[in-house]
Length: 263
Ligand code: MN
Image (cartoon, rainbow, N blue to C red; front, side):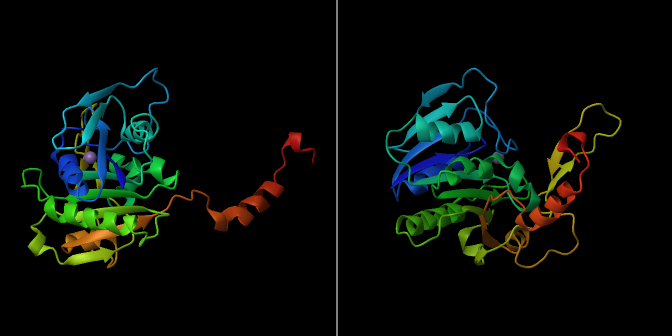
């Protein structure tokens, strides 16, 4: 199995190397990641730049080839698939992100949206994020790495539908403390907030990790699961058309009275 590994925290992030190491137990791993922090860039691709740099870098995992890209996570996946290998990529995994990617914040996530380029090419894609409450906490990648390794084996065996991006979020706790793995839906709200910079001409964003802005968390959502100590897996799809609204919009269009319509 040929596996392309990327992230949005950059090639130096410890999360991507924990992920690459776990996936070498399943297949042949190619690491292609941004040369610097790209969190929050969503689906961004470098359309308007003349060129994107590609630099082969020393790998931190034996047997893995690694490239740093002067662009976005989506650039990394596109270059990884089209330019940096001649083999067919069977699986794309993005992460392990330093912070959760849940609820309404998912579309902003460079980690999750990097895999969109794979999803549209019908390549199985997994995004994996570690939900910690404080950046000073010790990072426990082992539980998340074990789950993503198992998911890769399921996908390799054809035992899992892959017409989805699998968005995995793990609590940052020791594996023996993890309560289990739950398949969830994305919560209808997020963590990203405008920071407190009142009186300043500068704005800043902050993520209120572990403090969602709702008093009650709906059971079965990704945020609920992670806050309860479970690993959450949410299958995502990107059919952007709102099919239910097509008739109502069509009726509105029929009633339009623009001169060029000849009415
Ligand atoms: Mn990130």
